[in-house]
Length: 354
Image (cartoon, rainbow, N blue to C red; front, side, top):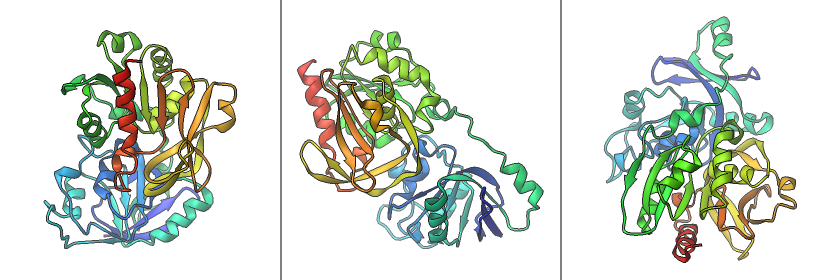
């Protein structure tokens, strides 16, 4: 069926619909050459229509191994060429069948380069995926979609669960955590208790943790002020490590501020410089917000990492408290293992019992 992606600035991009399901969301782009299943199941994409810039998607199929959460949370998927004959020893099926089974609206055969250029020019914006002949009045109704600001509550775990290990006890605050992060923490020996995003500081401390991890997640960090308040209380009590949304929440808790980027950083090829070592790492990223530089002045905070492309803050640490965070995803390992040292640093802090 012929369909189209319509952006709120009036741009129209035609293609083929995989199903007749319509959708609306914030349209963003991801520059990764691989990892499409991880993108589909990353809770940080909740509420978004994702455009993959790499032209051929689905060439290695799908497999349970690559799932990052209990279900996909993307609002839609936009690709250039949809591969119908995947080839990989790990493949358990094709992408088209997966998208249909998971009820993910998809438009393919689209000029994704043109979409990406439009977003880079005008910034992320609302968009809809609809049949090509849908009346303008119906499109206008769909375009009234607005973010609810409750994405974190939609993706967080509904209940506490354990991932045991014979090591330091870490309470993981789940704002939309990826499976690979949990695996990385467990692999280095952390005994994990994963708790919902709305867990209070008193409830966290009642679990007697050695340290606390703040996960990635979707949306604007200012939409979860109760989490900021919780982190503000906890950072005086226990070591803390945050990733992505967790990084932004920690910055807010420390008295900093955040802002929305024009089109965000999404992909597995983002260069970041470690200012403490001078080394540049290739990182995987997925975020639309960043920490405001001037808001950290006088806060006894050290900027540890910086994006090479645009100079935005990619990592911070407190000069006295054992708390630190990074904006990117060290567990995704596109380098392939350039950034796993951050988990080791967290373990070193926990071992010291600071």
